[in-house]
Image (cartoon, rainbow, N blue to C red; front, side, top):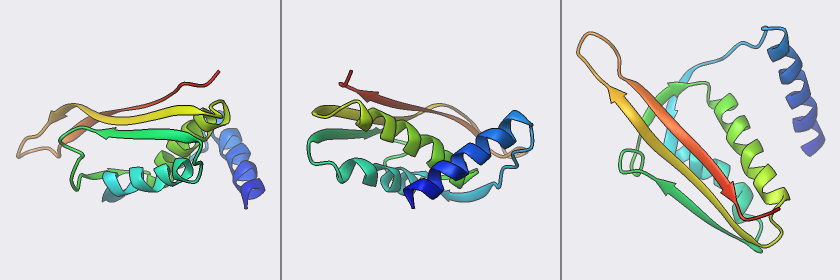
Length: 120
């Protein structure tokens, strides 16, 4: 299964280079998505981890974006942090930078994701 993920990542990268990557937006809870991504770290007992989410994301936080691509990017960043952190810490955070909401337009939210490790 790991090899299949690598092959799919390569194909996605090639499609992105050709501007042929299509996004499939869906509506989902960001907190649940983050918890799923954190499963990678939970499988590695040598590494302590911290997940920080700001007050907006601490509870159900529904967003619309390509869930598969978001998980792909976050999982790759977390996996990379683990690769270079045999022992130590991995810190993952999600923070709402700005939110604009009006009755005429849907809410637009900018979210900052940070993956930080104490490895090499």
